[in-house]
Image (tube, rainbow, N blue to C red; front, side, top):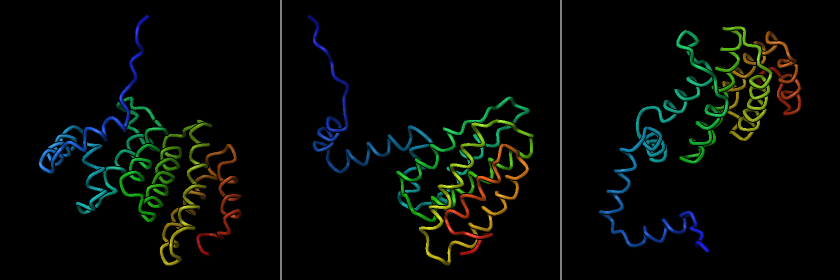
Length: 184
């Protein structure tokens, strides 16, 4: 009878980390930094480095929600949403999360209008993110809300051109959250 091997877990890694000295730990983080752009974006965001920590996350959202159709690129709502989740893990700053969610909505509705996309799953994801963006905005201090709400109102307006009840669903979400035309 063969013994079943278990996969390593965070506990196993954590146990090994306790044996590493400061120089070793810095070397490990340096290796992780060099290993991928995602790790770099994470560390830049975590430590507030660079002019715009949201830029790589926005680039990912843009790539997956507004692909270059002439290069036969496809859309991926999951990969665009992952960028928001990655930012949340790195920093989770509420203003940044709200900005990424609104940006997601802007890119999704813009691409849909630009190419005449008719994809109900894509539209459902857009409406769900619209609702999440409203929740995120509602959690911000009042003085930070108007610009983001104004941008979402523009998304809602374009949503009425998509069909499938997208604009109506957004109207309902605005009313549900107590927002009227971008102000509260």
